[in-house]
Amino acid sequence: MALERLQKFLARAGVASRRKAEELILSGRVRVNGRVVLELGLKVDPERDRVQVDGRRVRLMGGPVTLMLHKPSGYVSTTHDPQGRRTVMDLAPREFGRLYPVGRLDYDATGLMLLTNDGELAQRLTHPRYQVPRTYRVTVAGEVGDEALRKLAAGIELDGRPVSTEVKLLKRGNQRSTLEVTVWEGRYHLIKRLMEDVGHQVVKLKRIALGPLRLGRLPRGAWRHLTRQELVNLQVTVSHKYLKVRRIPSKGPDLFASRPAEPPPLKPRRRKVIEKADQT
Image (cartoon, rainbow, N blue to C red):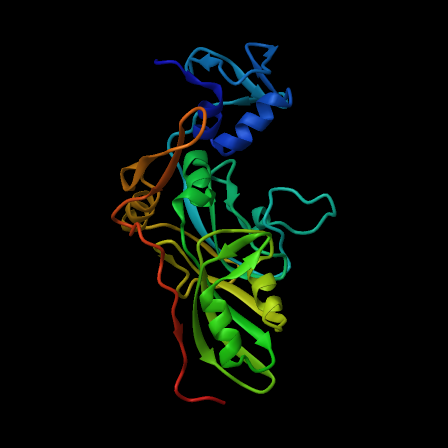
């Protein structure tokens, strides 16, 4: 069998994303044929070499598994929690072996999460270069005014970088308002911070879509396999054929950056604000 880089093998085996696999190697947690590996250039034969992570043998599985989970509130989006709280893995089926959550949702948030043993897919879905959209239904305290909507649509700067959003007002009330918000990145507490910036505290947060996937009527706490078409759509979303490299002039060595090619569009996404006609 052809040799492949150790971190790629670990990602294909579902141990972690390729980036996390590199961290495992550099931290001395990976052994190949009994010897600790501390460099990223090593190549292995998946059929002949014995690879271990934290003392446990790593083998390639029969094929990738990707599940959709409706995460309830009160679960952390990790495989283990030092505080002993419930994790999304407590809801995962055991028959598929080792699965990992793709990205994360806040402890008190609900909605669509993916669990997979496909480290390469997980890496691409969470990497900023692929700009995978995430859509949330957000309930906030108070009445969201027109100025707040305009500010959200124009793009709010957090941590020195602007956040592109699409905002749809679903319900406006004196005590609570509900919006649908789409973002293209996964920064920590991003939705909550955006709403706080316009003066509103998030009361409920539910992810209803990730890329081409929709949560639909999947019950809270339940999981299902992705359909074949959903898997195809997901792979297309993060496919390299929709990315191209452009050369950026710079001093010294050439720099390279990737940007989406058609589809998706090269130009910045339009930001929209759609207000519901009936206000409560």
